[in-house]
Image (cartoon, rainbow, N blue to C red; front, side, top):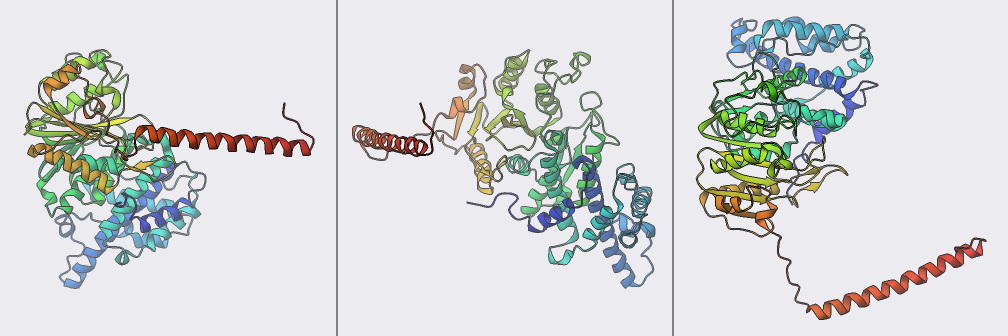
Length: 501
């Protein structure tokens, strides 16, 4: 079996373990800004100093020229904000003030970072001794042993995001989608070039995985344009830092904003939309948006925003655009309010390309079963929908959490690839291609189990009569052993003066 997605994280894991020991009595949500903020500060300082030293070596005196850095997408770090200054103050009472000052100076010099960096390191409740220890931790990272700065700190940032999601539980759903789910969406959509959009982008994981996909396939990251937004100001800032640490240019708007009421990209027509909207969001403001142009397929019910999110994304699709999104399983069959009618209208418009039923326990944040929806304005297999039942996939990596393996993800992606090529055959219990007429007969319910059926059990060659005689004989023997054990227990209890009536 292939490795799971978090198998190769030895270095990041060590960083997390060491940093987590220093948390003290801070909540995970507070500690998150401390660790992620310092990772970001170390990253931009390291990149700056590498370029700074190269310019010094050239000897032309351009090492303090801001344009030399911005032209290469490197953030300019003024003298008082460089990591060496922070490291020197690590074990002084002023370390928090020094870090806050560094963050302010960097924001002042780099318009893109204005209002994004955390500046609360001097607050009294943050133990300055522990803060100094975390600074030491990042000071002592030996980058060259683990790859370049961007790669190792990017991976560490991403790994720490996942660990904070685990620590925060349900509260983490606002900012983190497990990497194996994001990877599945990306591998199916294959965003090589064009406009990539996430209307509820959280910490930016969809964009990071899209960039990784392009790198794996020797593509050019500059061939995609990234757009997104998020309503949570803290999460929006995390996304900005996460993308900056990966060198991904993105337009997430000038501020955090509610997608339904303040669409920051109103004219955008995206080629790829990847999203994990909040599950079954109620009280999303339906009463104030009854006549919205986005509700082409029906007005979404006030008690559930699932089909509001879906229609918002369809509204933003280019003529060749594709959507990959996560929705709670209820959206596959619900008839509540207008949901059944909206789903039927979207299916009749031949926008649905495929549905994947996912296994349970993939999220840190919820046990709600989910499905992946894939929509396409330019379907190659018109009048058909691919159904995949992946509920038996994945491996439990902890007692509570399951991950899809690399093999699982690539199997699903290959199934979609073969479907597009017209070569995918039905596989009982796993996948099936259904026509829109087939779906109409099922009252436009999209639950994959209705179409893929149950996998056939392999015949072991033992005749039924012989098998039943063998099994009943074995069961009879077990009953005899059970009675013998029961008698022995009664006997032992009597020997110490206890009698079971």
